[in-house]
Length: 559
Image 1: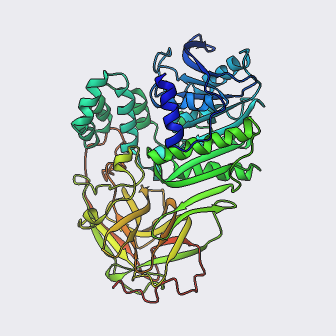
Image 2: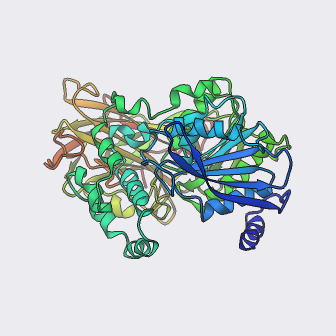
């Protein structure tokens, strides 16, 4: 009775389509045995509708709570819903090792589906984050019965997100390890830790060496965290069996993707979109003003996902025709329907100038700007793409911009709006007394009150041999920022922020070249940012307007 009341309320609150049936039976804890004999606990929501297709969700986060609500909501809309706990989680046998068993366990579960008397011969998959990784693990081999995928804030390959810019996404990885471990402790103990502000996690994020951080955060050594610290180089064989991007061209099922501009996996998910398009696919893409855990993301994914599954599993007409829908942030933005991603735009360079100015005018002869970076007092990260929604997204960056280890370059007030939609990159010319350093670049929107709101950013780790060094000791560092869709309002200013890190979002660079997990020696050093005709440091923005129009400020003076 309570489940029915919950779904009735959710249908109204979430503005979902009317249910096709209210009669749903639930069979819990079915032991689905995979090829090595391990039982995977599985729940089956069966609608009282003959010939209903199936939706499969495989998850390490449990089958109760939100998943139970999701199961019943989808079943009431005409789907058999199968929710399975991944190996080593919530009653399933074996040990949880991220990404290791998901291909075999997933394919064995599909084989089990085929043998069920209620299976109609068609199924789709749905899920966010890790629930999306497990979709990509089987998508190329699941057979013609797989008719649809709904991949939410996820990607086929997690390696590049874990080591963004060849750094290490410390906050995301350690927070995830802590969240997984928290699933194994009593509920009251977990609530107490959250109420206290997760002091153990905070201490772990600040700790060196990193090889000890998991035990500080969770009380135990976490095998995958230790492995990810060891196997961090781009050529590590460890990751070859844990990424599935090389099979995207073989995926035949239609794919719907939902993400957010401040999601941790956005760049990788857009790479998946591009790979599907290159292979002749027509995926659907939705990118909204969300972080990885936004409540708005869940609502949009549920609506869009059910619509996609309806269209491709049940043959019902879809309510949407545009293949790409994005939310443009900033004043005067809003939702836009596009024929493809990225849309046509004019790449426009905004150059760094002396005096902290930013302009489209070519750079002038000028001395470099210098900053001192000390990993013992690392430049902090504020907002942006993080795993936990409460700390993620756009925030006022003035506190971090006031630090001596941060440089800012700001445009004149815009005479008219400037809309930026697409990939964003930067080229920074750096001279450093240390060979090991990080370059963090962030684009911000400065409003009429002087508040500096982060739009997108990126970080690159520099080491000897990675980028050429010229005779003057200058290194040209290319930085790929998160893609974006943002409208800078008239009167606002663009700001580029430069620093030597963003801790603890990214692990601090110790400046010594010591191994990622065991580094404890911290070396501070000075670096110079060059911005003259020979070394034109700039951020390149995809401006959705004519670069010769009066949208751009006529003067480089910041005002």
